[in-house]
Amino acid sequence: MKALKRSLFRTNIYVLIAAIGMFILGWLINKYLVRTTSVIFYSRAIEDKIQDKEKDFQNFTKDTALLQSIVDGTYDESTLSELLFEQKRYGLFIYDRDTTYDHQLRFWNTHHITPGLLWEESDTVGLISLSSGKFVHVTKNITLRENRKYTIDALIPVLTEYFVQ
Image (cartoon, rainbow, N blue to C red; front, side, top):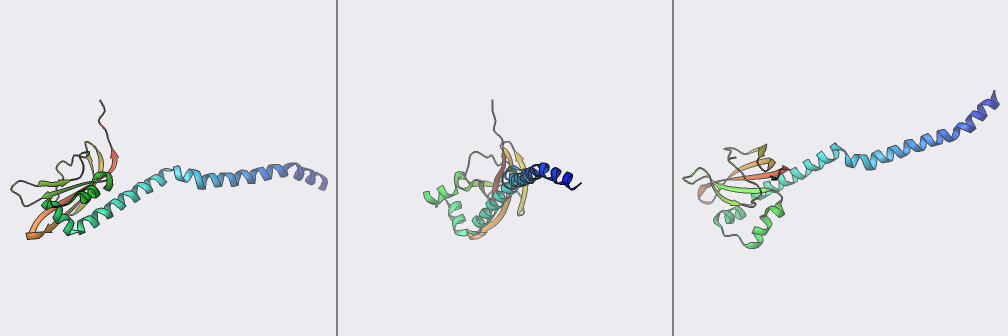
């Protein structure tokens, strides 16, 4: 009986070692390869990028001196290059709410996104669908010099759609 157990153990030790090796290999593949190609990984990466852009927009709306120079049209070329869509990676639209028209567009940083009629009376964040894709729409109402009211919209791209003929 002991001889039988010993002979089975000797012949099956290689199978046991192979099983342990396969288990470790599977764990390593799961840890380093599968996790970086999973839906959870990419959804978190997209969420992080959107949150970074939202924080950047909040910081932008706090800089009243910069906003005043933008609505006055007194900004310089370096300021404009920092505000372009290629740098910010989201669309900025500034509307004057104190005009005789409903909201006059004073500034925009991209021609890739058509904002449409998105005006909100309060500060909001939401997901919207436009002809150019799906965007996170962030609205901030501010008051600048001489109690002039402005609405600042950010359109953060989530999914871009292209018209192909």
